[in-house]
Image (cartoon, rainbow, N blue to C red; front, top):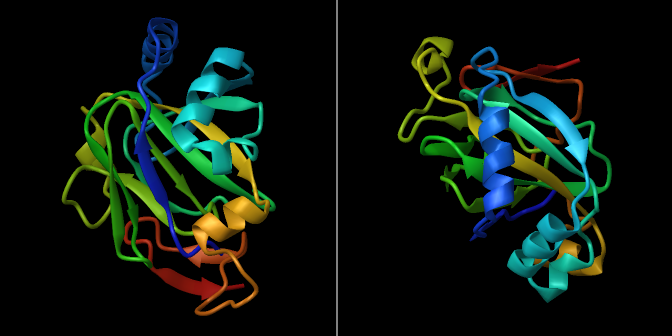
Length: 188
């Protein structure tokens, strides 16, 4: 598991904003992260690579996915193998990506990029909230993200503190996570 997350900024071009507004029109159920399709785009890749910097850009995979949510209950994305996950917020209200086990919160506003270990428990909450409740997001506009992935090469492993020394509880796709609090309730 990665020991660090990365937070940065990248301004999208007008075409990307226009596509994000179309995705934002899909309200979706509060709490769930919805996919609006995968795609590839050289300009988006170049813009993200520039924001990630020379050390990490070569690990950027060419495929992107539109995601949208109105808040997101706590979960992990343990189905990603040997890669880190990133979200680039393009449109939506101010939110926070919350990592309860690590005690970290990353502000999510348009132009914000967050790269993290998808195995780490996380949720998208309104600023300052500690727990997820669907009722808090019934009237909230959707946040729209471009999801991207970084292969774990030597540069990525070094930048995110990924090594053989595993400390703490290992999380997998079988780990039971309380969706409201992010607390691990038990493993199967």
